[in-house]
Image (cartoon, rainbow, N blue to C red):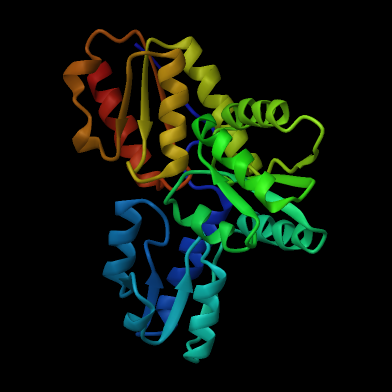
Length: 285
């Protein structure tokens, strides 16, 4: 059995920064909370809880210093925290902040902003709040007609298309082409704000999935970027397993595998990946 491990598997810069900075804060303060999970990974959340952080979902529950997670928050959240005089440690991924800045810049020039992203995802919710009243969150092609209606209602002629930083790169390109067909004649600017690390990880997943007969994607089921890796892997390798921990991996399902690929999402810690690799190698003996 051959094992191919993705070189880009595991923490991206934004996640590593958020987790490491939070650990530093916890060394110097006994009262720190975070609005929502700092990243979508149960192992990371559990580790930080054991170090003393409190995860809350409501600003009214906040005590002491508040961590703004890697996904970012809405403009309204920042406003409320400042009004309450709560100290903020902003650990929003720099790539997400850049998307917020682009949105606010183009609003000044009367652009309608289309954000291609996942409905209900914290990053999309936060970013959309920076896109102004004339904006639309588009998850996939099924809502393009509704988006066109809203653009026509706005009477704006200029459109800016942005992306959730962890969105599927290929899917984004396909949707943009469809939007251009529907809005033929409109001035459309496209800023592909998908994180470069996300694109590289997705490309590597594609390459590995095409080579092997079995793929293992490691990460939390709530992680948007990990779900994208699973979808990509499934497209090229039907025998793809999505697990968070080594305990979830059924070794019996790997018995007949000749080549196994292993890839992990941007919020998956190295320890979780290492345990998966160890379990697969034990099965190889």
